[in-house]
Amino acid sequence: MTLGRFVVCWLIAAAALVLEGCAVAPGSTRGDPLESMNRAVFSFNETIDAEVLKPAATSYQIIVPEFVRTSIENFFNNFNDGWSAINQLLQAKPAAALEMGLKFGVNTVFGFGGFVDVAGAGIERRSEDFGQTLGRWGLGPGPYLVLPLLGPSTLRDTVSLAADWKAIPEAFVERGGERWALATVHVISVRAGLLSATRALDEIALDKYSLIRDGYLARRRNQIYDGNPPDEPEADDSSDATEAAPPK
Amino acid sequence: MFRRVLLGLVLCAAQAFAQAEVAPDAFVMQLSSEIIDAVKSDQQIQSGDVARIRVLVDSKIVPNVNLQRMVVKSVGPQWRTATPDQQKRLTEEFKTYLINTYSGALTQVKDQSIKLRPVRTGANPNEVVIGTDVVGKGDPIQLDYRLEKAGDTWKIFDFNVLGLWATDSFRSQFARDLSAGGIDALIDRLTEKNKAIAGSKG
Image 1 (cartoon, rainbow over the protein chains, first blue to last red):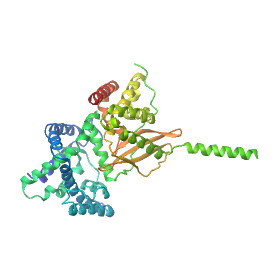
Image 2 (cartoon, rainbow over the protein chains, first blue to last red; image 1 turned 90 degrees about the horizontal axis):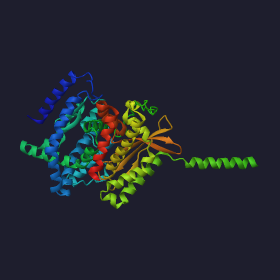
Image 3 (cartoon, each protein chain N blue to C red; image 1 turned 45 degrees about the vertical axis):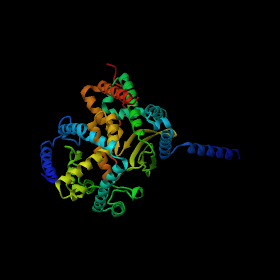
Image 4 (tube, one colour; image 1 turned 135 degrees about the vertical axis):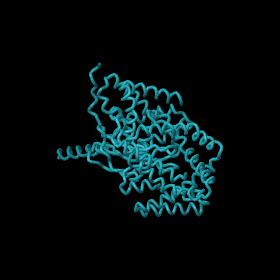
């Protein structure tokens, strides 16, 4: 089963559940009608992360020297930059597209295929993916989804994966075995980059699931509007509710 | 003649008084720079002494925060059902939790600097959102503040990291404990969490 078909199957399953669970289930949060299913998948992902991913990423961080890890990170980021440029064009942002295209070009040609980030801080990275493109053109996020292994997403962002996955290095590798090897390195590299952030998250989160969900949804909204989302009406301040109920 | 002198004096005083007022963006920049400089220059903090960061946050940041408004906003409508004693305990634990959270973030500060984003004034002159970016080696991290006017200066009553407002996040996380066992359950959970954080780093 190819990755593409896997995504499609998952989408059909999710869509079926969405249609079935359209009414907000009691106890679930707005924007997360599939909360109980999501929490179950989240639990599963956490287990896999603790047993497999985190140990692998930690070893990777300890064993592999920093400049090698940075080069690998640069290689994958470079592909992202190329895809970002295309998405910026799709979002009618020609200036940003030109800049990101330049960053991709410079790093690919002068950076040994992307392993060295020659452009560096000189050209600021503005990441765009197909989900943001769809969002920019008005497609709402749809329900929050926790994907097996892949983690937080929305219906829109999941659908966009099909497009995003055409632009990653793995898509250009012919043989299946090599493709999986590359994908493994990719995943471990990303996970290692997130180790200190997830450590901090583990420490402060009272409810890790909702923190990740709220963080993901807010971040996506932010990314679509490039840091300037329209103001949402503030939740009721209750700042006048400082008097307490009489003691029981 | 005397009236003109008096008028002159009054205008001078008014001018001086106006200059004593702090603009919200200047307030944020000053506070942020103070904290970042303190973290960068302190050897013990750079070598991982989190307790020292907590002391720093307690002494420099907490006085500039409207803690009451933050905790009420983070707990939501159930705040009204709490007794004065519960509210006091909840506020105390919330303050510790906030200090722990912020200190955790500050441990990551190595060579970052703060850049202000253009100020957008809203309809209400007594409240404003100030946006900053924490710029370092990786992508810039967005860090915004909601400020309310407090005399000549301002107080923070909410902050936003990468698009997520802290009080929204707290409200969502607190909701589980609140619905499970009410205010007392939340207080217990926060107390437990604070102990765990303090225990792990010392």
